[in-house]
Length: 158
Image 1 (cartoon, one colour):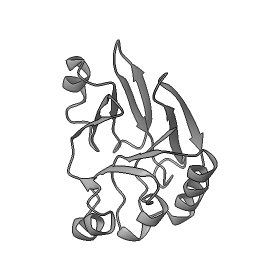
Image 2 (cartoon, one colour; image 1 turned 120 degrees about the vertical axis):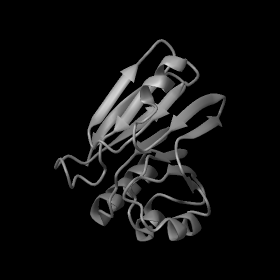
Image 3 (cartoon, helix red, strand yellow; image 1 turned 90 degrees about the vertical axis):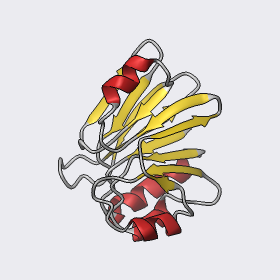
Image 4 (cartoon, one colour; image 1 turned 60 degrees about the vertical axis):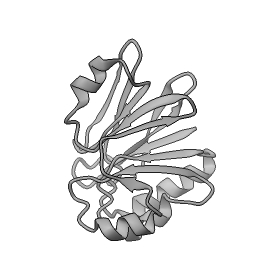
């Protein structure tokens, strides 16, 4: 099971809830689509026993410490990954979304920034924006659990 989240914006209360979900659902991989904001939120998501992949968002000003505290697992996006034979594109702002979608290169595209949940299945690609995990802007705190093998996903509201 994979966890897709974005826009945590230093909400430690929600980060603690997410940490419990990670444990309860035996999450194997976490994809964070940016806007962590400060490094002190990272211990809730970056764990030795779980593979973590992140991209910087437009509100991530402390990039040096975010990089150090994540052991280099947060990178500038867009980020092209191949994991378990799946090709994945991660980004914060959806600048290249239409081009990536029409390319048919990716099994999954993950993005954030808009604070709105968005999912779309094309012929090959499952596109996911998990909304905002912080809940600061919309009042709705959300993450998405994904079973990659069958592309089944579930929105969890915190």
